[in-house]
Image (cartoon, rainbow, N blue to C red; front, side, top):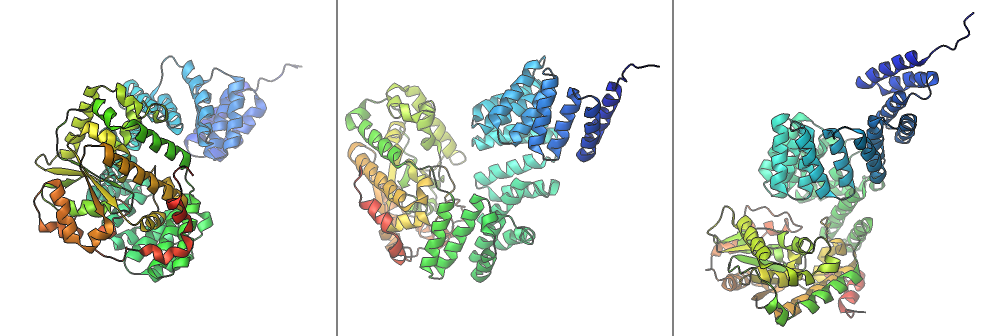
Length: 596
């Protein structure tokens, strides 16, 4: 009689191969059952534990998948694919640091890096806000495999997030040349066109992406927004209507509410929003929907209910605004940029007169001024360019808290000359004969000292408005861009206005740049007189087209895009009085001592 134990390993290996086939056919549940049997026969089979981790991952049982993969790398620490699978699962669990440890273990076992492994590591660096490292890793992946369409797609996504749009578009096009019809690349090109306000092109790319993949998320949301910005409200409604039937996503509800309101169908919008499940919405969608509800109540004269909605919207997304940090940075800028130091600091040597910077608080009339000037044939409106606003971080090596603005004393003149030249070249592209170009990023009031070093012949237009109206209007907007967190709290809005006043008073004393002040109330009270004064300040002849700014076909993507499509109206003056009972925190902040 043969008492030798039966070798179960061949049977376990056979079951493991069977499970791999099931996973490949999209049957992870069947694979799990087969693998459980295999592991009863061979409990230390690392390949079976690895495949069980894959199956559980596909079943979205992520903690169980991680446990299985840990068993795999314990059974065989030299199995690189198990380490990579563990990194994938930990990434899905939202633990990029742990995932990177696993990924690097796997990479260390390979004779040479593979493109998929480098792409995985790039995604983990991106999750840790290290976009530059992610870009380098993706370029490395493409050097390993120039035919990796996915690497081009992911590179385009990272570059787009960094607002390096030309490079991102090239990456998406490379992806499409290798794999025509990739929906993500088409949607990425649409998003770039959208960011540039090339909305018909954006719409076309989004529609192509949806033809390839009807559920492509960037294209689904992007098409709705592109149609809305083009004032195709009925088309936008038609696009989102199928999403509203059952368990509608929050962004579709808010989009439909906005479009219905703008079509004059506020009753329908109100009914739609009243039925919405706000608690189930992601925070950003809830904020947008509550903002629309506030606007509907405002237009109906229901000011108490409107204020409650705006307050609830802002409470959904409390910002990371640092009042003390704002005070310190303003004081530091004022202390550094003295008249004697400005005379000694390196400068670009640029003598261009085209740059015009429109600054002030958001909602103070900057978009209105740009639209008026943009109707002049010799003036090019460039929107809210962020080139100058990003320079302090760039020049200080990413550490403005330690090095800005003192780094300017050690900045090479040639660097400033190149920055000025690049700024002009990109702004004047396609229109080299324009006399003036308008950069209307309101927050550049912080950077006027730097602007004088770059463009000593630039002109500054400073927009001012009743601070109570400005504050209320900021509070009523759903600002989503970084740097606008202050607008979610009335006290913070008041402090931010104080910062703007202090800086503009300082600049008027120390700069040689000409500064023209536009009072919003005077401009809407006397549009022609205000417009003539603006053009006189810019040194260009009067053109009556400037009074028809609302007829411009130019697209505006800021919070003012609805208002600038209307003729001058005065109902925006003293609007704060409708909300006076609830604005005490704003008034107190406006009147508080700077270092209170």
